[in-house]
Image 1: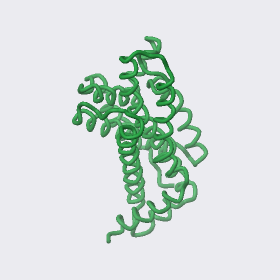
Image 2 (image 1 turned 45 degrees about the horizontal axis):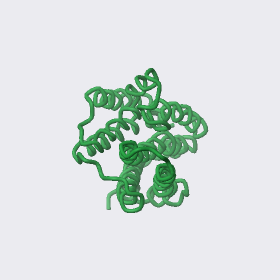
Image 3 (image 1 turned 30 degrees about the vertical axis):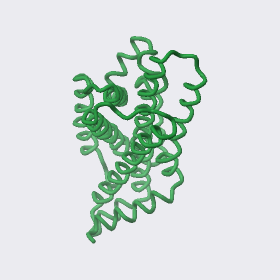
Length: 245
C-alpha cells in the first residue's frame, strides 16, 4: 500500500468520525427530499407544477450537498491542518502534504457521489422523484459542477489563515450562492435580475445544468462556460496562493 493510499485511508476514518460528515452525506439530502415532499403533497398546485418540483428538488438537494462540502467542509479541514502546522511538518517528511490535499479532495468527491446516489435512490423509492431523463447530461453537469465548486473551496482554503477564517469566508460565500443560485427558490420564481446574476455563479450554473438533465436536455452553453472558467481560474488562484504553513 502506497503512502498516498495509506494517508487517504486514515483521512477517511477521521472524516467518518466527524458527525458533520454523516449529516452531509445522509441526513441533509434525505431531509430536503422529505420536506419538499410534504410541501408538494399538501399543496394545491397543478400537475405541471408538481412535475417541475419533482425535477427541481433532487437537483437542488445534490447542489446543496456539494456546495456545503466545497465551501465549508473542505476548506475548514485544510485550514485547520495548516493552523495546527500539520502541513508544515508533513513538508519535512517523506509524505509530501500534497498527498493530504489529494486525500481530502478524493474523500469529499466520494462523499458528493454518495450523496447524489442517495438522492437518486431514496428520492425515487421513498418520495416519488424521477431519475434524470438525460444520463450523459447529468454526468457532465454533476462532474463539472462538483469540480467548479471544489475549486472555489480550494481558493477559500488557500486564502484563509486558519479554521475560523475559512468557516467565515465559506459561510459568506454560501448564503449568497444559495440565494442567487436558485437553491432557496427556483430560478423561475426569482426576480429577473437575480436570476441573471445566478446564471454567472458556479452554483447557479451547476444547478440549472442538473435541472436541464432531469428535463432531458444538455446543459446550456453559458452554464458550461461559467463552470469551465470557474475551474480554470479558481484552480489557478488556489495553486498560486496555497501555503503549506
